[in-house]
Length: 499
Image 1 (tube, rainbow, N blue to C red):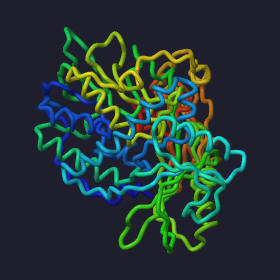
Image 2 (cartoon, rainbow, N blue to C red):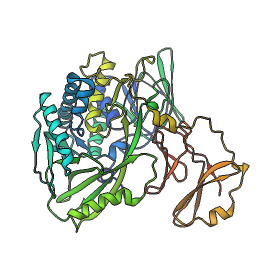
Image 3 (cartoon, helix red, strand yellow):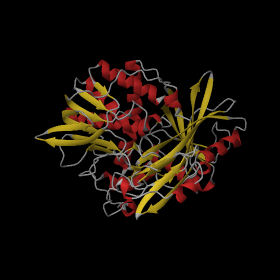
């Protein structure tokens, strides 16, 4: 099953692959919601922009979200206030509240039909032990000048202990919004090139050259808008965040649904919202998150969500299933701004911590202002070059220290006893002639063998039996069973073998 956002939105963007070398003011690498939002604002300020994406617009992370436009990012404000102070927490809140208004203004100004709806947002609990943390969060948010409410009832089909309510939040159809952004960029003389995978970026004499497979883009400024930075040095973002995978189902409940957007406080996480669907509403339920690369199965992912829905809507029908990856920073705050202190005119935004709809707009405005030479009041809050006191010991420990030498296909032959004993639709990892090999046999008995070592920094990959992919437990890269790269930070395919 595909993402509802992709399945319900035809591709009406007039874009092509990069077919020649080009020069521009700003090259944006990544056509997700942050990259497009940045390009949109720059085009409106008469800046020449090129957007490069390795896929179609909105086909990756931005097209696999729950698409809540909210400043309510879990119970975060008490944490921010205690960790960084009142002004920091207030700026974080105001930045995301402004983002809601900014998105609504773009939709109105560009006449984008994307099912934008104002909704109240709730973080709720059914556990008595979480009542006090919610009460404390309400007090904290209100001390920052916002009007949050403590409530003990909501319109969910089950009883809650309590919740914190944020009024006037919103939800929309993210891919329709991105298509609208893309067409506005094109109308304002911006360029968008899809199926144009970036492999490298060099700087010489203050001019950046961005390389795709066949052609290159020269620019004064570069914006890294890929989901996860594929350039390791000098930013070292791979030491400051990890990736989390979560799952979403689209459900026809055969009944009337609630108003509002909801997420609970503690694992197992369940996120609820609805979306217009034919003449009724479709229920979207997300959760079952885990660190990307962990071993999972259907029952621990989609199965958990479907079981929860069946408790409350026993006659429901599952129409969609999809999953997504989110970059999680160690201090819960996105990295927005300079890529590094020693690379002038290169900018980045990453680590949205599952709240990219609003954070991407905050980021687009900060990066736009930096390129235009305008001071942005929120820049220091999201400073991308900050040194966190939290050390990423677990992630560093997961990385393979020694370099992994390339394996030549003819060095060994995969024994037939390994493949003959392998059941259909199953995978095994084995050692052959001292080399680690991952072998998958599909439902029809076809065999696919790869070297299960991430092409990013050499971490050993884990098999994902839900999606039939090879996932990196270190930084979240993903490859299909044939070895094709699906998600960054890796950009190269796995080495595959003839079986």
